[in-house]
Length: 304
Ligand SMILES: Nc1nc2c(ncn2[C@@H]2O[C@H](COP(=O)(O)OP(=O)(O)O)[C@@H](O)[C@H]2O)c(=O)[nH]1
Ligand SMILES: [Mg+2]
Ligand SMILES: [Zn+2]
Figure 1 (cartoon, rainbow, N blue to C red):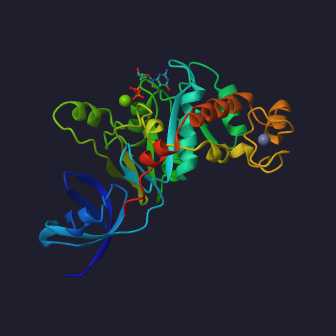
Figure 2 (cartoon, helix red, strand yellow; figure 1 turned 90 degrees about the horizontal axis):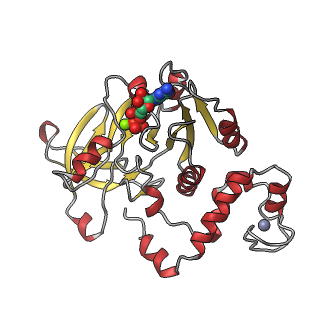
């Protein structure tokens, strides 16, 4: 039997469903994975030996990952559409910035989608994030625009949607993919609390080679709690700081209270928004409290 290359679209109870050339093969992991502490994840690109009639196959190798998240358990996520409503509920920039920071750290491109623009003018909010260097789309789910743009952005990539309850994720996903009945994990989450204990990710066909993740965990902004960023790594997770990093008077400047800090000067001059800078300072304070052993414990070496 010939080895195939495929993408795991679902990993559940020791079964891996591998998509290859439009066909899904049910596989189990190679016996040695357990000893080698390799846990294949949804999103993994793998080599596998297919069994008969697309069943009873074996995953033989997990190819190198671009990134991985613990919660939700997913590998190789390319982009995260961060859905935020301009009102009802109002956006919480600290929560948004936290998620963006994790995305930057994991090399996941965050894209903001601002909903409910039929209820309130979103320009101030959109400008804040556009100025920081992010792509921002705004729409009303009552009369949605940009649906083709969003679909095109998903071509050939693995994408997920995140956002708090009530912001309009389900409405948007139904507008985008009426036949998929996606709910970014809310259904799986309910199941997770009830009959099943395993919370798993499923990747669906988003057209043009794109995959969309139905992800328990993103709805509640859970990932911020599981991804640890050291204080020294934080400034690199604020992309609008980049032109100023290295121009401060002190080497290893924390950009919080130092003299002749290029980042602080940029804030004073309005080149960096105060709101984003305040998020940085808040996360820096949190990161300062972390002990080294805590970081090591949270950051297990990549299992591949
Ligand atoms: N006016 C308005 N209401 C919206 C919009 N998007 C969603 N809603 C409403 O907001 C509520 C929550 O939407 P839903 O899609 O369930 O949000 P989810 O919790 O993120 O999945 C529902 O009553 C929707 O009809 C929008 O763009 N404009
Ligand atoms: Mg929903
Ligand atoms: Zn500085």
